[in-house]
Image 1 (cartoon, rainbow, N blue to C red):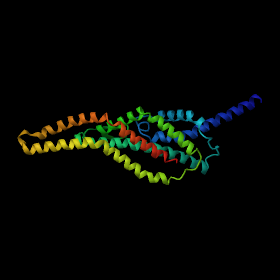
Image 2 (cartoon, helix red, strand yellow):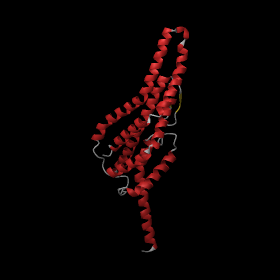
Image 3 (cartoon, one colour):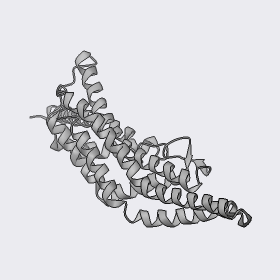
Image 4 (cartoon, rainbow, N blue to C red):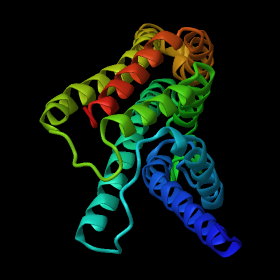
Length: 263
């Protein structure tokens, strides 16, 4: 084989590798855009593109062959839309778990009197309560500390094996029937995290209300807000050490629901 033929073969092989990486980046990039923390405004788009490219380069040799490029025909457009839909679905299901944490934080803020403490939230966009942002960041720390990112990459690999690039989607009736169950688990998890502190704050407020009726000269209403705030922060500190198992169950439910997208 002469040098010209060898160069042409190497060029075709390089273009084939680039095509494989670009096909792989579709699902990964869509997942990164929809997932929490990485898919927020706090992370620049260039960082997400670089991360998607790095993951695509690492995973593409382990994946089934991608379809041959035939131009932007109907089959190619549908394949691109299918890859984006799978990636967005996986990332969105994981985002719901983090929104459950933010919801729990808002419920806790209502009980402790910190609902008025609003500030700009770069992770979710707009403004939200301080306690809600604290729960959101705590969920992120628990996600990475429990190797949730590795489980997410493993789930992504399983999705490529179950639904290769260019293959048709499986029957999603099972996923659609499991979606309400997952939504109930998310809301139940948010209420379960906020319920102990909310009940404690309700008892404290009722105690100050009874004291205000029994001894109005003591003016306990003025002491109610600072005492409730201090006790709420103390109970929140105690609650932080017990949040690992329930948050882990929420992550497991999210991964199970995301696995149902491709099964």
